[in-house]
Amino acid sequence: MLLAAGKDNFDIVGTINLDNYKDSLEDLYLTIASLRQAEYLPNQRIIISSTVDYYTQSTHGILLQSLQTIVNAVDISNFFICFITTNVNIKKEYQYVLDTFSTDLVPFEIQIAEGKFSKLDGDKQPYRKINNLQINDIAVLEQEQKDLLFNSKNFCILPWISVMIGTDSEVTPCCAYEGDQLGNCSTHSLESIWNNTTSQNLRAQMLEDKTINGCSECIKLENLGKRSLRNSMNVTFSKHIDVIKQGATPEYNIKYIDSRFNNLCNLSCRSCFHGASSSWHAPSVAMGLIDKSTPVFLKAGRNTTDLFDQVVEQIDNLDRIYFAGGEPIIINDNWRILDELDRRGHHDVELIYNTNMNQSKLKGRSIFDAWKNFKNISIGASLDAEGPRGEYLRTGTVWSKVIEFRKQLIEQRPDIDFYISCTTSIINALHVPDFHRSWVDKGLIQPEQFNIQTLLQPEWMCVNTAPEYLRKQIIEKYQQHLVWLKPLDSHGRATYGFESIIEQLNDVVEFDPQLFWKNILPLDEYYNANLLHSFPELANSLRW
Image (tube, rainbow, N blue to C red; front, side):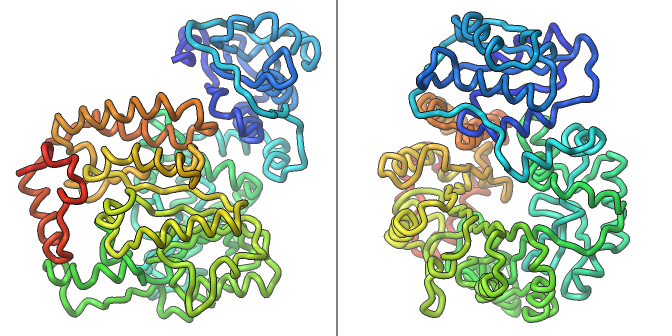
């Protein structure tokens, strides 16, 4: 990789692949701002690589110009930038950029690497500093605050601003946290949990930059050189960094709520369980996974009214709400939250949905009508495969309803940030590139609107348990898919997912056919389904 080219010569402060920011110059600003130091040592460098650029009405690269403008705006000397590119004309182009746009007479260090350089089409405008709250907040941060947010190994802002409430009533800082619960809202109020001993200890450890066992998922991603939830949240919520001045006992003031009010769901997905879907109750009883006396519907909190009231108490403070479940569009309390936000005129709050796209109405009300006054909405569609394959993996899915929902969304709310959230397992892995390409070709998504969620549990379904023949098939297919995808994936969102699956496949776990089919066949029998009828491409790989 290009980024590796400069690593032997310098002490590296940070690395940036400019290609990943070609349509996200504000994010580029934030990333470079996070690497700013009050002082650099003479041998320290920020390594920036590039294999593409826009040349709209220009003889020099628009990204190159933007990079220079941002570096100077953040107040980093050009001396500490090493720019590595496959552009053979870079020295002539950069001299013009340096003379015209740089406030620093010292140039970047330029290195030319072997490889293809692509000139992109499109009406691309260079970076201009705009009045963006997130950018402004990053720009004015004190160096100590930047170090905590962007250079610490363990600090995460979420325990100061966020709660995640599961259908089991467990309260944690976020959905990725795997440590002991902070508290249980069936027995304690959210306010009492906010600053209980467990919450205080977690914050204190983070302020001391100590390793947190519950944060292992983020740590693992970062050790692999990947961007974690911690990284993203520290940027997104950097404007609230002053809250840490309150230490381990901050004021009860929630900015982000991830609430699963209950497990009501219209589907029983193969990768799910009763705790997150009421539709899993009957098959779970039939297969002996839970006792018949287990309630079908699981409600978070002492009762739904109580928890709802507690959330409403914080509603004016909220920057972001994540709706899941269950299926959030059929959970009544989620609609009540929307109505309360609407009543108060709190339309600037960010709404994020994780939905299976089989329902767009509740009691005759359209979700599109409920969203009409809200301008900042994101939808992650839980779709794992196309057509009959998708209906097999998420039992109860009617594929025509999925298509109808997506077309309605394009027609009524094209401004909504939409992406597919594809849970990838040994069952659907080989089909995922076909699914992705099909929706792009049909105009239902752009190439970058595709997130891969790597299945980690249950282990027998994980993609890295694939037998050798299937593993090779998947890797080859993904590599071919990436050749098509990478030039089209401006943010690297989809690319990252496919590359992650390839990485996971290298962590080989031996396939246990007996265990696999022991779990597949009872559910197939219960639903009168057949895995190999839905996924015939697996017939030669997974037969027992």
